[in-house]
Image (cartoon, rainbow, N blue to C red):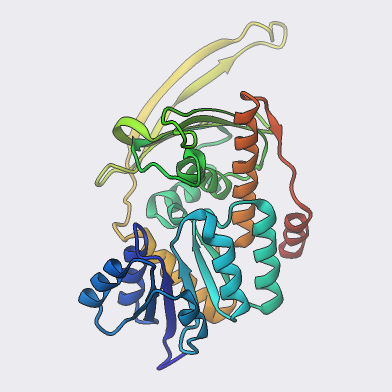
Length: 353
């Protein structure tokens, strides 16, 4: 650290890298020391915006720089594991764009490496740091919705087509991380179907169902081939229901006092009478603060204090296990795939209980 600031290196200045550089640059607890990218044109753009930041086409330059304490990785998924492993072995704390790695095995190796070296490993599940998702989690923890019946989400747009991952690894990863974050229950199985409409590319649309041990069920629909951009989620409970629209400029969350009531006598338990309840709707205030700004601040705090991040390696591993199971289900035409909690996760859960 220099001048009580954490030195940051960023690898990858394509789609997400500029956002990371911008947010680290405005945080007083950090100083962006260097950025690495294979495209000289992108490095030229950095020099125009951030003249004090060193640029290089060689990732090793960041790893060898003793003034860099942490590395932020914003590169294609297939490169995450090697780049993160190299950073950890160089003694750097690591923030990786989602998903953490291409497989659960790789994720577990990164977790072990970070733990062995006492370094912070965090994955960029940005939606967990949005004020909207934080408010939803707060409402669910207070049981404002009662028992959760379902989570139903549509996440679609026209692009961006990825070469190394299918649409669930690109878009559904958001909802899977949100589901893990806001619900008490863990999914026990997953079923998925997907379609590819561009020759030589992975699936560009998919429908995923997550099953839970209780009555809750989650449906996630993702699509790169949609005429409009949609980011809408419905969460239904026994008391209230939520509509979460991330594209809404102000009222992103609407809480509806709506639902059903079941009436049946003991003698006629098989003959339920269903009543419908319709009450008020209210939209809680949502802070306009950028999620990535909150996330970057959280990462820096975790590096300084040793606190385990909200989106740590273990939470990233749980997400990847669901992604792998969903991909396997797609290859088997929707056959449900059971999810097993790995030994590492069980041990960590007991240690933090």
